[in-house]
Amino acid sequence: MMGGREFLRNELVAVAEAVVPDQQPVVTHDPGPVNPGVLFDGRGAATVCRVSVETGNPRDPDPAAAVSVAAEALRARGWDAEVSAPENGHYRVAASRDGFEVAVHAWASDWRITFTGETPLVS
Image (cartoon, rainbow, N blue to C red; front, side, top):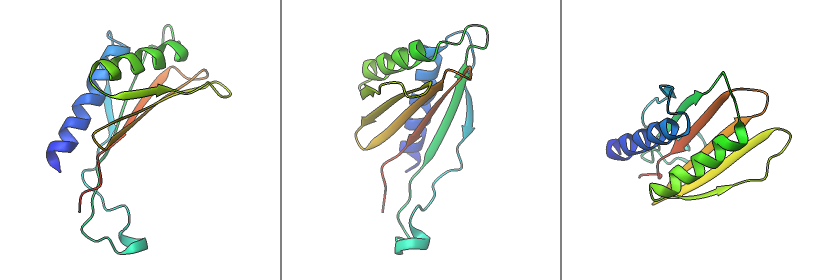
């Protein structure tokens, strides 16, 4: 599980660096393995890791370009990535690779770009 967590974290940071090369990405959420279903369905041993990274360009935010570059960077790293049509100033990319899932979010009203990923569920 920890190898998957490190892989995911490294991928998110690398893609964030590709999107905004002159900024240092920040890991904003990485609590370690959690059990997403323990209170609901008894999967006591099943765990998943969720990691979030943020970056952005406060001087020249361009959410459409950011998600496009993120999708290209993910594809170059072996991910299947799909850019969604913008909705109310919200720009998104969804990507997957070997059971890992990533979502990239950028908004027209904010200069930050958020990269959130989840490892495969492990029992």
